[in-house]
Amino acid sequence: MENKKKNNGIFVGILIGIIIMLLVFVGLFATGNIGFKKNTTNGQNNGNSSNESNNELTESEALNILKTKVDFAEKFFTTYANPCGEGAETDLSIQPKDGHHYYKSKQYNSFSQLNSSLLEHMSQEVINLRTQFTKENYLEQNGNLYCMDLAGGSLVNYIPEKTEYKLNNTTDNSITASIVSYIESGDDSMTEYNEKRNISVELTKNGDNWQITKYEGDRIDFFDR
Image 1 (cartoon, one colour):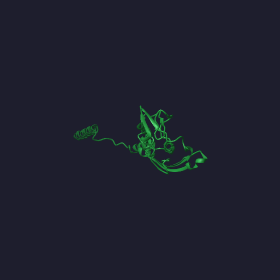
Image 2 (cartoon, one colour; image 1 turned 60 degrees about the vertical axis):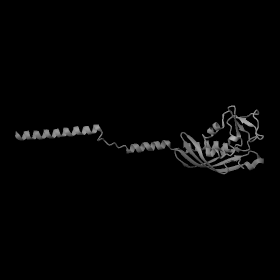
Image 3 (cartoon, rainbow, N blue to C red; image 1 turned 30 degrees about the vertical axis):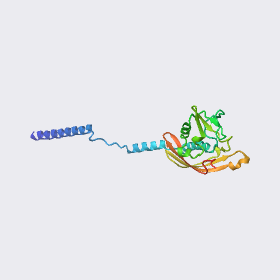
Image 4 (cartoon, rainbow, N blue to C red; image 1 turned 135 degrees about the vertical axis):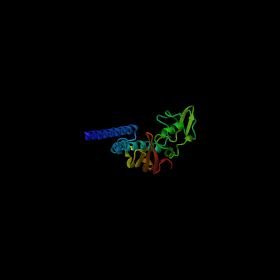
């Protein structure tokens, strides 16, 4: 009987000890001093890979962006007339300057507004490669923008369907490429204006917009002779 009581006492002591340990464990867990370690490494890696995959441009996407921006830049650099927006018409009510008449812009009211529009496609450094694009060749009057007419017509045409593109490197926020651009006069008597130009291009993503930040190669400013 005495041994039985002794065994019961040991059992009760062990049970009390277990209860105390459980209470301590629950307390530590509740206060955040201990916790269960989750194996999230694979999940995190997979998540990062997924994000990187979503952000990384495909070759098709990069080429589409490149073609759109290069097409705009080539027209900017090879069209002799000053940029003035769509539908600009000669306004004979404005006094000519040095024999040059002015177009009245239907899109822009100031030179800075026009320049801001160009900045959606090219950095200011690239825009400035066109030496004729200066405020002196524009007139702001009565809330309108007038663009000096430097030529009676277009001397050459940029042929986008002939342009060759080669992607050199692509990331989620930059594209570097080489292009071969074709310029033709369309007139057999003016073949001296026909040119094939090799140009290095770099585009940088600013926010949601892609901007040409480098444009180097054969005579970028086509009319700077």
